[in-house]
Image: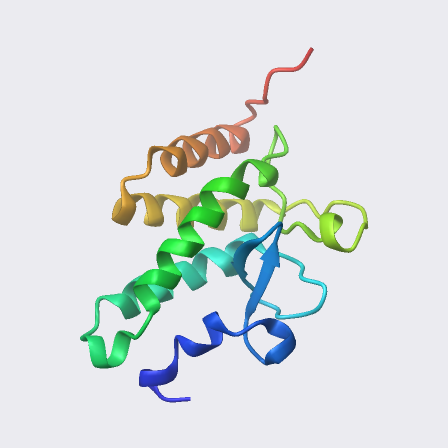
Length: 148
């Protein structure tokens, strides 16, 4: 697949050889394009970064990458709270699609989540991303969410 076509996999569903799955009707770009999807957070955010960088290329190379990036950002904003455990983050949402036990992120992956949220905040200025990154960084320092 050449650079000119690299965004095509993001528009194609995983069942058709692409990396796209649906999470409650929203586009999710899979790190592991399986059926049903596992919805890995770091892989999704890396995909968004790639789409953003591709969208900065001239139109003959970037294709629909800007629209795919914006669509992915809407999904991230909507589902980011589902990854918050109150004391860390989930690695993925396999427990939703596969109906298995939740998969907590190891601290190294939790740190990657924070880094990627900050990176995406730097390009989008989306306060939700920054607030989530800051809250998750506090979890790494021992802070926990309120409880009843």
